[in-house]
Image (cartoon, rainbow, N blue to C red; front, side, top):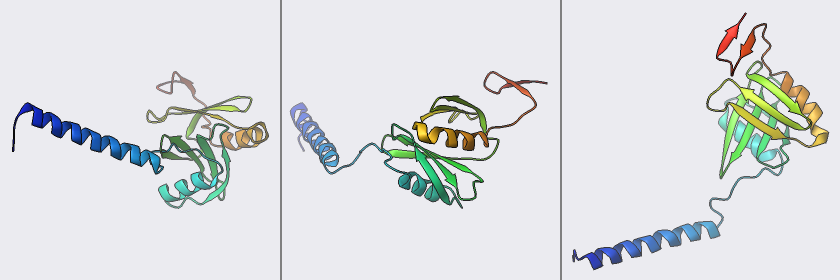
Length: 156
């Protein structure tokens, strides 16, 4: 094999072209498409696949199609599904796991005491906002203790 700089440059160029062609081909056949929720079927499916024993009930999609709330049958847990590029992030919320819930019309700011997912903002349509706001409030932590900051310091 020839170790000349020109041969090495040619090999690198051909390799770069091949990788570029694979990327373009993948894009053309539909790879790497961003996830958008049209209805509650995909978020429900993701929750049932990711969470042991989760049986999806009624669901609602955020106005931008990038988030969904799915109530479990029996309403014991609330499923949260977030679209992140071509993947979905799922989370199950049990009663008391929402640290704070702020409502601004149909926009909800959900705060968790979890550094991996500290806050989620979901915009619902006006028709769904009130009912789902009431449902989410059942999962807010009820505490006699005043929390300061993001839940790191407590005062009695």
